[in-house]
Length: 379
Ligand code: HEM
View 1 (spheres, rainbow, N blue to C red):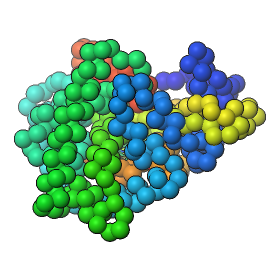
View 2: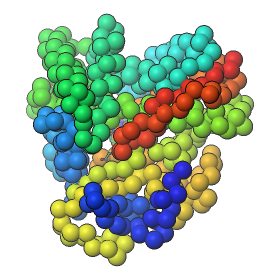
View 3: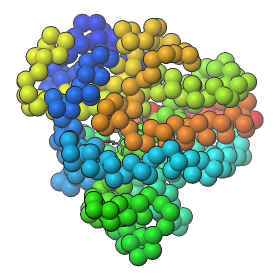
View 4: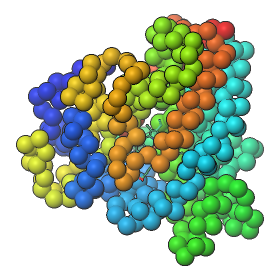
């Protein structure tokens, strides 16, 4: 899928890309080095890279994904409770039920766009629950998330900018109400956890809570949509792999791990170089932007034998959830969503086929997956 990356890994593993000016890092070892060394490669870079897209207002500016050091650790400690194993487990029964409902919906249709019918509603529902949205808001939430999550670090049309700003204003307005309500009457949910965390000496401001919730929408929605859609695209093209999973659904977790490596939902991570640094023999000056290309690292022949083969049984994990301080806080949740989704599909369908309708791809540069995936759902 990325023949250009193989050549980069071979010939120019660290190279400045013109006219954009950023440095592309394509080997596993170097990508891992970049994201394991936040003192040399700062995450504040993300902020700059996203700024144009947010037309002056940037909800990521104070979020943990764009923070380093103690500021990052404080945020991460406060929110991590909501993502621990027992919190995730509590959600599983509801997610499994929703997965089966969505699969039944596919069965009724017979064919259609897998993204809008399954891959999007499943994680959107999960994030909606995390944000404390009540069901009556789910239809508005869909519009917000479409407008907000489709933002990429590229120039925006004025119409898109306008829509994005309106969506952010609506969403943050609504979240303020949820936070106020949970302050009055705590419930058993993430927002209440975040509000309560304020009481134990440490505290989060309303603004910080809102920024974190918007971060979840950005970090947790499109990525998971892509994982599900990439999986189904692969299985429609490889019916023998689908048959193997169907015969033995306990292989699903291994399938998901290999899918994450084979088709990375997150393509690249952005960092800013804090001091002159030499990587693979190439000097990168202080202040430069580096793009650690996760999807290339995941196909590096130095790390994975036969990297372009899909192989369920591999010893080396992928780097798709990142590494070190910023390792994806939603990794277990995303894995569980994907597992529930796959198990529901396996239980209802003997296979999937592409239809003549056109497959389209998302346009963002930092994430990758189908935008629409027309499939026939075979009972
Ligand atoms: C961070 C990937 C799903 C929330 C990250 C990072 C990666 C990633 C690569 C590291 C970013 C960096 O180092 O700059 C993915 C993929 C997903 C996924 C591939 C799905 C397949 C989710 C979900 C949530 C989530 C479901 C929450 C609902 C976050 C948050 C961070 C993060 C909050 C920032 C952590 C920090 O800065 O300490 N994710 N993610 N992600 N992810 Fe995910």
